Amino acid sequence: MSNVFEAFSEIDDLEEQLHDEDPGVRHVAVLELGECSEPEAIELLVKAVSDTAQNVRKQAAIALGNFDGPEAAAGLCVALKDDNSEVAQAAAISLTELKDPSAADVIIPLTQDEDSFIRASAFGGLKELCNPKSMQPATLALQDENSKVREAAVSVIGWLQDESAVDALITATLDSSPNVRLVACSALSFSRKSEAIEAVAACLDDDDWRVREIASETLAKTRSHAALAALINCTMDDFWQVRVKAVGALGVLGDPTAIDPIGALIDSTIPNLRKVCATALGEIGDKRAIPYLRSIENDPDPDVRKNARWALERVA
Image (cartoon, rainbow, N blue to C red):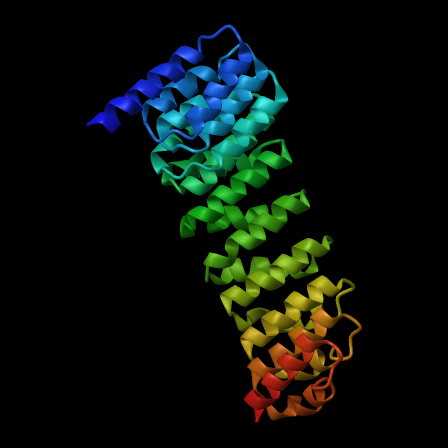
């Protein structure tokens, strides 16, 4: 019983310190509350986000990230509206640490705030919570004038992995912002609908190489052969990062049609690309790949050699 009384005594002492005239004392109290396991600490930290000292408010916002639930979310929502950008940014980061889905009820109203930073931060917090209640505000936000808000909203929809939202995600792959298109393309990896796969395949022609890279990666996850020709075409992309993902996807699909296009990259000056080519040829497992693999089995890069020899054993 003594430990319980000691815990309550500690909370009482920290609460008293929060009323001290010295902001340094209050700051230290907030630091200790952030390390406290007692539920009463949340209430005190929520009060501290309204402290007159900026560094105390910021520390309170950081400390609330160590807790969870609607009470912690309520305090962070207050801090998110703080006039000081450092306090608001700390609150935005802590919102992403919440895991209790019930916290969504407190955060959702902020998705309608007039400040785009607050709207985007609210969706950032909702993403990890995976609360179905977030779907409607996230879908509405796809029309938001601010691209960062749209991007955060698409992330929420993607994490919910609800087939009813596939059409909204497909629309987002055509967004004016490449960041939104990129996130939407990645979010569609859960769907096996032909419309979703077609939309991702269309992203292989996107103007932004990052979108093409993510599209290749997403198609590997869907394991659909519908985009085989488009992926083969991407092995000639101007950016090696796209070529790496396209080759990786072709390896997953395992279609022998891709052997020669992959083999054409086997003498690339980029070790990572040679390594992925070796792996992909091994996954395809066709003996026609042996000459390509023989050419790099003594590659100067140890990872390339390792993958090439593994692939040769697999093909044999």
